[in-house]
Image (cartoon, rainbow, N blue to C red):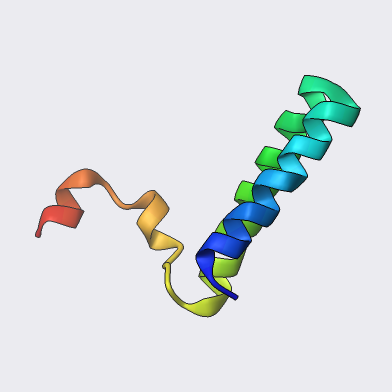
Length: 61
């Protein structure tokens, strides 16, 4: 599945949540989507958990 289709599905889900559930539901769906995205990237091996906890000086070296 292409990233454009994934983005479209995510946008539609946020749109439905915002329309039917209000702003609180919109924020909840957006936050859970971000958590799911990061979890998926970690499981695929594209991202390392240390990327979130490393200091900026360690990234430049």
